[in-house]
Image 1 (spheres, rainbow, N blue to C red):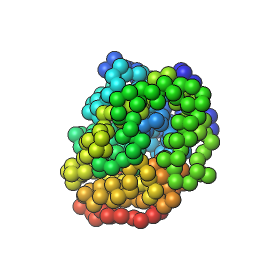
Image 2 (cartoon, helix red, strand yellow):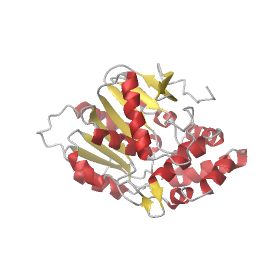
Image 3 (cartoon, one colour):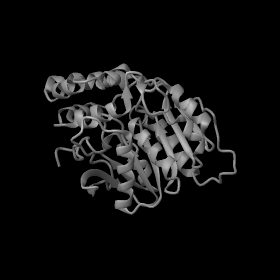
Length: 308
């Protein structure tokens, strides 16, 4: 290990490693029951789900990954990592662990990965939750577009290895990621600063996937048109004040879904599971209880307006 922060108050959470396609991936697991995979966004790691894992673990087997290139998982040699790499790797991870059917929950870049796998393998994905997901529209924050520029990502990655650079980077992330600064947990600051200083994390966990998905005009891969093909229950959760990917992306996505529900959480940014975990967990728990509802019943809600 290289210093993973594990919240020891989380009951029965175990750290594990798997070798998939010759690459080592780190994840934590907890609980028993149907499998749920949690996929973080750029600049995050598995710990972004620390308020969610105990809720799900009461009735499910939870797997929260450090995506390749990020945190404790193996670094990749490329400065550009396309979305297809991550979705192919996730499918191989499910094979390696023998998980034939799963629910996927993905935030931001993790939502893009989850959606790609769901669209390709609906026989294996029984339900999907997209949390402020990428790939549902072109628009994104200018800072991310800047990271995709030649040499800018390399310079920021090097800058973050210094204590002052890591601190500044963490504050910049906080300013664009959260709606209400007073609700940012101190544990998030500590983890974000640690990740920034971790050798290769910013380059592998932020810059490379950003370059794989973003160009000067914003997000390259937009999967909005494919959502109508999804026949599985799908929950879309969004922070109303998200600066990274605007909430109207989520509203547009929900309108395309056959069995979809949208929950927009007021006064909340890009990480609702961190900024407003109680509202997030309430919406996710209700969804998990109803995913077995027959497809013939009226499942679609074009928008919920507020969290329940």
